[in-house]
Image 1 (tube, rainbow, N blue to C red):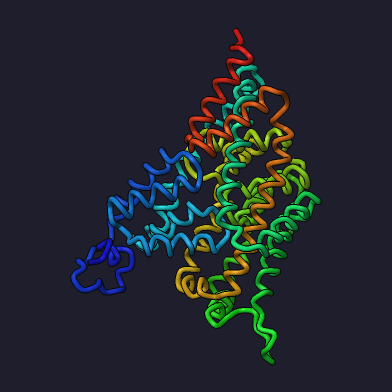
Image 2: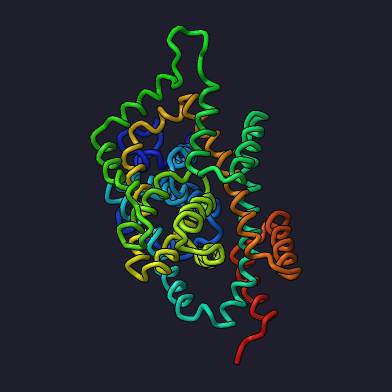
Length: 414
């Protein structure tokens, strides 16, 4: 007997197995309500979001089989962008078609956009007051611990062999040296893909036949139109105009693989080092606010957009960084399962994932230098890391505790 009777709801075109009841596609309202609630309550980052979706939609509601859920999760990891948001978008498409794709993604993202915008307003309005400074004094070390905990958990999955471990060490060295994040990801992916070349054949091919579908995808009108929309990225200037802000975040949303924390490396390179739009301290403040609120880590872009251009900037940055996720999910669906069977494409992704962890390590070091400024912050970061790794304490509670300790350590001004 099948473990889950919901395969037909996830993929209506496939007939149900014998004895398995057919399940109609879900209503758009039901889909929107679930992801709106998830966006309002899902603390803990991408891993927590994915765990909640699996528990609610596979075990409880039976919208998907576990096998289908894992396929969609794998598909989300094959494309750049926020993996948990892309998983929500994939599920929305499976459940209610293109309208479901838009509804699931928008409802998951919108609550975080509103909350982060409110925090950004308060930060701009009151950010220089001692109470807010004290709060961030306690939150920042906890954020460093959360990033390190995510790095540890992801590395246990990503580093599958000695070759990948060696590649990770080399990538970390290049990341600390200052190699551009996108170039580092490409080099690491290509290095692993080259290991799949068959040198004994007269005609050397890197990609196995299933990956030819990806090659055909790259030539389709829909993909070329999406690529053309992003082509002016190279013309971004140092002026914080809305158009420039949109293009910067569109580029970042188009190339960031791995966890949302890898986003920090790209943000620091583009906005702190190259354009000087932000300081390291402001960037860490943006991450801290992202940890205080539920929803996707990528709404860090909302906070930064508000700092640079108030509400129009917040909206533009949010649309820019999430738009590629919607486009890539929409165009990758027909070939995604073939791509996953390609040995070279899988090896490329393995290399990209390891390089992503190297970037996380480098950026966490840089951010730690801005947030761990004395013995108290060092102790707070260490204790938080132990609680996360050993006792699996929810990161949201630790962030709240850090905020309280920060205020108490500095006193509340009168």
